[in-house]
Amino acid sequence: ILEADLPGFTREDVHAEIKNGYLTIRAEHKSENEDKNETYLRRERSYGSFSRTFDLDGIDAEAITASFKDGVLTLELPKLTPKAEEARRLEIQ
Image (tube, rainbow, N blue to C red; front, side, top):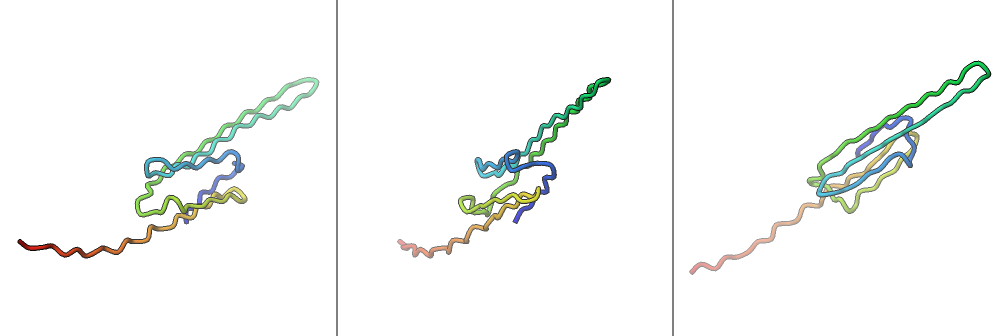
């Protein structure tokens, strides 16, 4: 299980992608606030981003599941089941 705390981000801000054996998690958030009065105009802009990449060696990439709740992204990364080695008899000449 991999958990990423992403306070201030919404589900729409978060993206997860698997490519070439790597899992990349990205989140980007932009906001703009404006406060108007007769004597002043106040504008605030904020921007935040997050990006992490993880190697998926030993992970079953097809079975990964993700959920996002209360600012926490949770990914379940199941391990690959080890393949039993097959014995092969060699013919000696």
